[in-house]
Image (cartoon, rainbow over all chains, first blue to last red; front, side, top):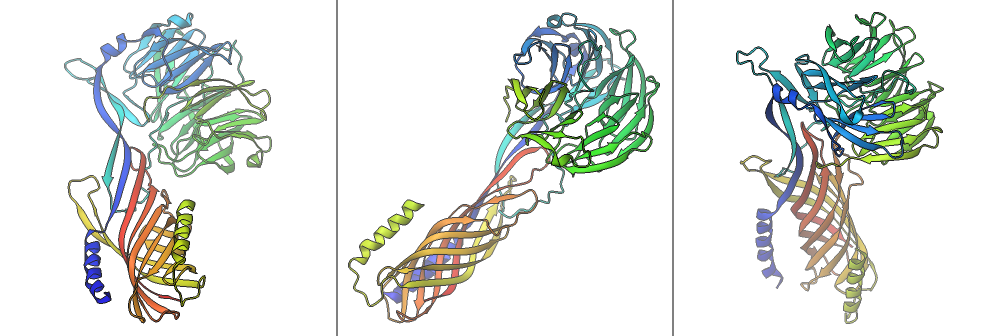
Length: 433
Length: 192
């Protein structure tokens, strides 16, 4: 019996060797971009107030008085009545194609619409009306890392349009060799919820102020009689001495790719992909570059208070950053910014400072609240860490904190920063993975 | 898993009831082997062309158990398999069952089933590898007398599941891999 088994074993062995194949299947979800073109004539005629909508893909937030304006990326602005923060009510939706940024002064709301800057009268927030427009001031831009461009400006047909892309996600399954080791040095990409999202918060709230508040990721800023807009590597100023009729004023070029802008005292702090630039804005019509605080490549929102600039750097973005950290920079002498200390973080995004409390968004790792009285030991004074929310950007309004993330918009009572109480949540109604 | 083990043990106990043995029951047995895992992989990676590579890995394992009867032994197998991008430590329940043969050379059947862990595994940056289920049935040849230590040669089929998260490439938001290693294992070892 035994010897007969031997050839059988050999047969089985050979058969096995022949058919033993490793099976490796890789499943991946890829973002697919499909180009489309929209005529500017059609875009311009679409700007109007409509009935309220659900939050699907929120971008930046802006608050003015009792109202909250939430950008729906590339679609428009949700107008929310926030007189009761525990029960915010959607009032209406302003349809603005290609919108990503908001700024409000008194009763005029400034919004970008692809290539144009639009001013809307929001004295009656439920019925916003377009009152002014500066045409063709932005030639290109990007939302979530996908660029759009203005086409046909100098063409003989005179037909101007915007080329943009729709984004959808495709799942595919392929067979792999089980041992593929792609070097992660290849470009990282975070499908990016809001690379241009912005909360612009420059201090404590007071509804009597003419300007509203945005977050640390803002690309629009209001100061004196100018609206400062950030576009790729330039600062584009609009004169708003006549509020409903902004006038294209001037452009300041820089050598950096700018992401965020934060006005502070008579200076402008610009976050760029390779550092923070400080502009002297004592003459608001002519900001002058004073100094640059360089850091490694990363996207970096900045907030400033008490002559200390808090800069976050993060990985996993279209900026291809390599560090996750919070930098504290001494800007008491704006010509020579000095690094105070670097703190390692998980994946810091937007932030807001209401001394001595710093609210730091850690993306899908949640929200962290720090006591920053001792600037050299911030990491030892973590007051709270909320892990189960997605935190992109925050606005601190003294007693309340507004937070936007992939899962929704949250408002908190922060009278006691150690015991933050959630007041309300507007969940995002997401249709995509 | 627990049910499986208790099932095996109860089966063994039943069998043991009619064994006439020369062998001491409940004696500690050990079976340690090393060898290679041989196979191939055929892949296309999304393209229309299929590429075939051959694969060889090193495997080591040790089986420690008790003799439950004249022919049957059961115990726990611990091993280490060095796949190219995963170092798996399988922990399995195993049985070794001798078939009759000559007194100095016998065939035996072996089977292990368990879970492969990634305890000793280190991932490249961006990867996160997790282990999975493993089965390893096969046949071997034991050379040596009963009651003494013997050399073994064994041939088994080994199937190991592994899953991995991979770093994202441009424009991807998720990238996961499910692997099933199907190999023929040829091992030599000793048993005592």
